Length: 186
Image (cartoon, rainbow, N blue to C red):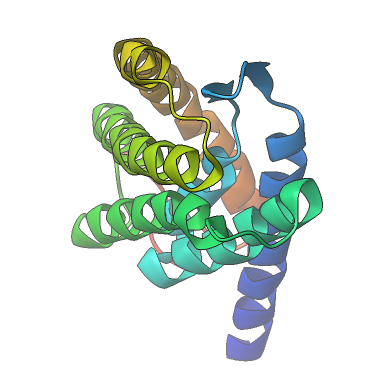
């Protein structure tokens, strides 16, 4: 039985990594400065279901594949992966602390915190990338910070609010609750 649960967990992680890649391609781009996507959704779900290691694995595999397919290997590839790895770590640690039993309010907080982590680290990646590749325009990069912050905050609230039913559906898919843990409390 233990092997079946671990196999289901690995299959779920692989499915979520593939979803991260697909959602990365289904993004809305506003110039080179802003991209609105849902590629972090599967990363955070993996972390909420199975913990920080799985969240980070889904981030590394999913976001790396998206970066590879979109841009190839560049000097800043790792800088674009790190924000999602950090979000997976944060979400997984928070979920683990609550024994994988987060209510709706906690899920909203988790998603907001993760979105802000991604915003902050991606802002650093934008700055480094723009300096390395010579497209740095202080007015545009700095001017977009506040807009990107607002977008991250709104996205965190919306994704957190809708995450509980999706997590329950994924828990049903795995057949054993949230990663073998108790089902979510309301």
